[in-house]
Length: 97
Image (tube, rainbow, N blue to C red):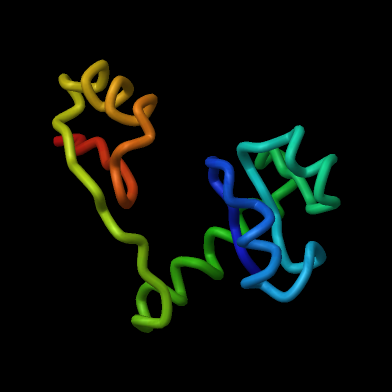
């Protein structure tokens, strides 16, 4: 199972996961329709189930997400601007105290 939380990589994620039946997106409704993957707004419980699976993979060291840059929550506007450039490699993380 693969979880998409945004971005433009649905075709690659589908290929990596072994087909559209193995992908769920919580952020890309149009992409879900276009590529035939499941979409969840989180209200049905499926997103929670998928996040729990991802958490187990992270805990076991089988899955990781590269962090491109971190920002304190107060710098959210700067983080947004960086995200819009598309120049960051990895995820942008907001740090909440």
